[in-house]
Image (tube, rainbow, N blue to C red):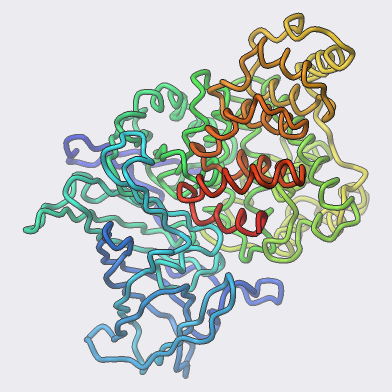
Length: 626
């Protein structure tokens, strides 16, 4: 096992967390995979001809125009004789492009392709560094500009970015492909009353005063990372340390709740290291964002972006943080080369998350969460159209795996390997795998080859038991899939049966139920319920008024399925105050499924809520409700 260097900076700026030295980045640029399955169909780049190795950003965040304006200087590694480089863009306004000496370079933007954007082709003229002067669009898909009323503090605006999977090309002109890893630095100028944070080392935590009253913040990421992991947030942001190398950023109105919920973060990092080797990114901090953030969390290096919906006061949902932390190995350290293999990120991470929860909390808690993953797996297989549907493959069309099967089927695959070969042998393999491929891209074919070379080792009987190719390339679920069963959830199932048989809600043994247990109960109930039965549940447990976003979303799904109109005020308040896609999208889908009753409600609520949602969520809901 590697030894982690944990030396604090010699100078600690007031109000800032100490920076912890990260494991030194490998020498030279990360490799480019050239096998056929490593071709990224969602990028215009041709990295085998000319590739970006480093990005220097110098940008002004203009809240008045909702644009990022300035320059991106790119270091280029080109093959002998290469005359051009192709970058990915999406509605960027390019003013000019020069070499490092300021000499103009010829460039052109090709035809726009829906969702993917447009190629930016630049004549290099021998340049090894190019400087692009540009501005983003006010509608940049990666950026959400929040007015003060949509923040927790209600006084100052907020900007947040979401790069995964191909949104960063809307504010950074680069080769926006996960297989083209790049180091980066940034200088970001913001209004003087706001703070900027990014997914790299904070070089100037307090900012630098500029003559016009603005502040400049500087950041650096010495490791080569996939470009979707370059992330930024700007707003009224406070910091609270949680441990020697961990802390939480949040709006001042949220910071106390966030720090209380995240008290175990330092232990999580240590626990993860005890499983699969050193944490190689220096600090691990969490930024709790305003409620419009579209995902549960985003694993941006050194700074996980997190939804405030996990702040339920009981730490019942900190598996979200375990998941994003686990990405520091699976995803950030070893990255899927294309979005056809997203399961290499999410399946590995969901498995790793569960192992963290087991070791830090208890096997019972881990079993509960693993059993819920099985529930999600079965639902997604059904909703995809059945186990023969092509969208149930792990390796498939880019972004084409149905629902959360990258997470659910992917983690079940790894759990099945663990149970087949034994935990000790599997853990030794995974640790060595992360070491062998650190800071590199990977494909499904590459993973299977590594697995066969370093774990199977020619054992024909083991190869047959594992069914590796069937798991990776075929639809559906192989017959060797391991299902972890939770005794706690079996007790919840008994309560589902009791209520379905007519038991009064107040007689259920529901005292002390966790978030996950409530989800199992509400989603386990028959979808068809009488109005008086729903009213009985709501009176007994205050579900329409629940402050737990996970429980309330599950309750509202059930209410919508039965056209339970007393829940409509709760529904309106919820979808206009929460922007997390996994919680609100099922509600809009449920309304749409209710036809003449539901669609008018869906459109009315969406018209009101749409300005509060991130562009990522808007894009999917626009299509759903069109």
